[in-house]
Image (cartoon, rainbow, N blue to C red):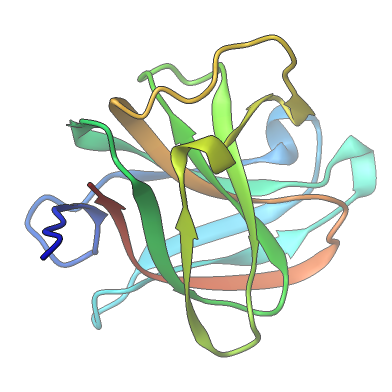
Length: 169
């Protein structure tokens, strides 16, 4: 029998809820608006409007983990309910505000709960919207930040409900 170990990165139910921070394209003059709230049913809403005006085009939310998720995880699994749009789940291996983010895109189904699984090799290193070449791949032994981003010229309203995010070893 194969025994797996889970490390809950976020489930919005514990006393150790993460401090989530919105970062929208306003940091570069854009007009997109993203919002985030934790619900009484122990889920979280990430919603808003993506605007392509003023060189904009993204909304994001991220959190610094209370303790690093260390170890060689086999996959990251997240459970979400979406609006049919494509989102990016992002990992950072340091506590810095800016720097390399490792991203994996997933497409939601409108008004349906879905689970998405990503192995460490599925993550692409990015920096400010550009894929990085000749850089180190994700070092899954040290997850420090997690987050979500909507971009890719998906103008208009968006809505993503997050149930939980886990690392499975």
